[in-house]
Amino acid sequence: MSQDAFRLISPGGSEIELPVRTGTIGPDVIDIAKLYKEQGVFTYDPGFVSTGSCESDITYIDGEEGVLMYRGYPVEQLAANSNFIEVSYLLLRGDLPTSTELEKFERTIRRHTMLNEGMLNFFKGFRYDAHPMAMLSAVVGSMSAYYHSEMDASNPDHRDIFAHRILAKLPTIAAAAYKLNIGQPFIYPRNDLNYCENLLHMLFAVPAEPYEIDEVAAEALDLLFILHADHEQNCSTSTVRMAGSSGANPYSAIAAGISALWGPAHGGANEAVLKMLEQIGDTSQIKKYVDKAKDKSDPFRLMGFGHRVYKNFDPRATIIRDMCHKVLQRLDRKDTPLFDLAQELEQVALKDDYFVEKNLYPNVDFYSGIIYKALGIPTSMFTVMFALGRSVGWASHWREMIADPTTKIARPRQLYTGPAQRDYAPIEKR
Ligand code: ACO
Image (cartoon, rainbow, N blue to C red):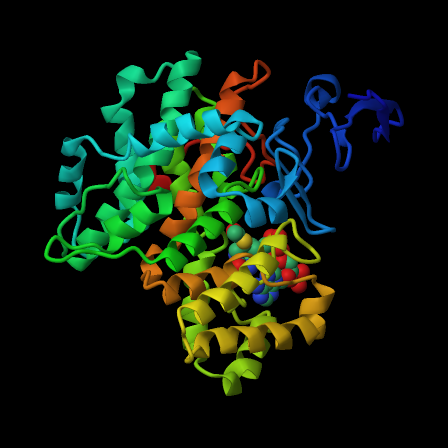
């Protein structure tokens, strides 16, 4: 790390030197950790637009160039050559596995897919129409009750067990939530199937008849999970790190991350995109909705457009658009009105001055919902699918944060704009 200095002039005219830190790639970072102690001022950055919160060697994004790399490997290469389990190993351990390491890791994940039977009782307590993201967050939170005794954060083996449990059991919890919603019996995992095949089995099999795995669907899910696996300090991952920084049980921290992901500005966007496309209805209505999105007095936004970091294109969106095309073709879908509408909407928005000037491009979720829909996954499960992919990113970040000796409890400061001190008045005098 280079230690150049960044110089500021204080309002009193004195020069302040702030150390500058340099990462492997990417912009330098001004280290302001001692600013308050030495100068008595805070920095102000709502939404952390210009603020780094930690050091990390997991994922790199260049928003201007549309670059996304996991542990240095471009996501395009991983999407073309790897699979979700291998990518999970890479994110958690830092390097690609040898075949022996991969075999062992995959066996571990496959052998821990079952839930403690008591956890299934939680589902009996939810209303039949509970949103699966609410159930996912609640039941993952309950893992802190079930697996508390093997969760000493200072023990590296426990940290591994935690990550393996998250990866292995989340699909089972997600499928149980879906089965509750549709009133079908819970389907136990099959450890002879790979990660995505098993997920499809738990979602779509019924005890009354054999279920044949759709390999196109399994492949598409695997690709989507690779693309969603990590995205550095996004809202849900930062939530996991922030909750975990207090030393909280990591299953609770993951539950907090799931709740953050659910918001429509984050992982909830894939569900929102599909609802929006259905609302737009057909290509003749595109102009009306694009105008609504540009109208500042109208809260409507084009869902699936824009990204805090990507300001030229989202590399995941390019991969996913191609996959969307392939999935629809391979499933022999001749009738693809939503996909056609999405493509047309993308073209109109990409040529529109408002979207061009503000660098608003389709993000990964613009097309993922269309793929999920084609695979028969209901809209309410879209964000759950995102959570399954992202779970390994959350676990990797929690592990990195907890093992980092410089980690402090996350505790931002504020610019206070409330009343200055005033005296309490008895109720009859107010
Ligand atoms: N439609 C219309 N206008 C938009 C959109 C949109 N989708 N996104 C941003 N803008 C406008 C804003 O109104 C703002 O205009 P202004 O400068 O005139 O005030 C400008 O573009 C910048 O937008 P911000 O909201 O300030 O940008 P920010 O980085 O805070 O937000 C976000 C990024 C939340 C993704 C935003 O673009 C958005 O709401 N998009 C739609 C939801 C979505 O698709 N989310 C998924 C994100 S990807 C993911 O989580 C996997």
